[in-house]
Length: 430
Image 1: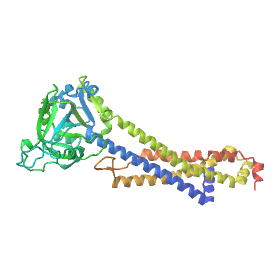
Image 2: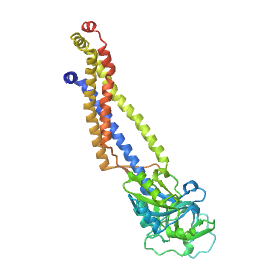
Image 3: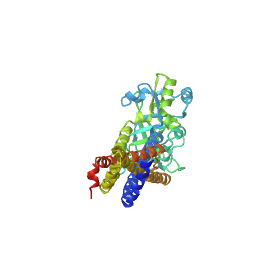
Image 4: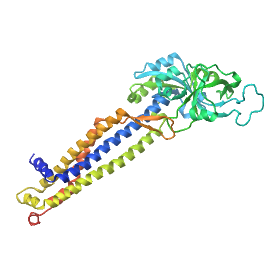
């Protein structure tokens, strides 16, 4: 306690230098917490977009599906029965199931001749044909598993039923095909003026369905724009897969229980099925977050190093100014380890005060940014993502501990220099 009192008084002797050291530490620790909160918020947006806008928390496939998804996905389908859904829903943590079919399709648009004219269309009037990756969904079931899909329909609307004749395409893809969403309630164009949805079934036979564009998907994440949504019933007719799907997407609450629920679901379904978590379906996410965390670690080290260098400089100046004082303390019987402890205590006090103020300010900034949100569109996206930074109290406590320990260690070199002084030479110092 005496050392603590000495250390506190020593810091107050040169207030300007102490304040400068504290400001550097406050700025460094505040920036550290704020940056961690922003990265956490950005990663949470990515997770929500992947889970609630694309994959679902879990997916159930027939055994061997993922290993052969590029070869013959339609050949590894499964029967979508009420009994199977009931088995899935009976697992604790599962709250909803949505059937899907993933398949490659082709859309062919009609020629755009003026009404009543019968002639060879010009290049501008000719229809277009293009391939795209289709996901067949039941809109009611999908809303409970991947509700963000509904928010991402920009122009137009989501098709109302699984047997609808409407499809949804990415907005940029639809623009390239020169088609626009049909107005809600407008009469359907005649068959010859509708687009043709074409796809090969499991036997390789090409089938078609006449469809219209019901809505356009916004681009939320960078990637291939040639994607679309198709009503599940329409896709099953097209692919000759009535009552069958390629996957069952599963909603789990809370999201953090996904590993535990996945293991329980795999045990309940048996070896005929395989269960995959969203992060297993998109392993690239781990690389993205790993890179972001590495960059954060480098930046954090720079912030902390700058703040601690200020403390090192402050303690070195303090040692030079207090040579005679240190010599006196050593001459009257103070041990060298007590001199070291005194300077370490001064550094720890600086770290505790500066760290506490810095992490508190950073935490308040993160809370404020979480409330207002940061509107930041992803590269290549046509809609904004609202990033809501957040940081846990455990990280705040760890950051404070890092500030205290780091500041104490930063004073170790000046403290060793002070303890190495010889009393006789120190007392003669001018």
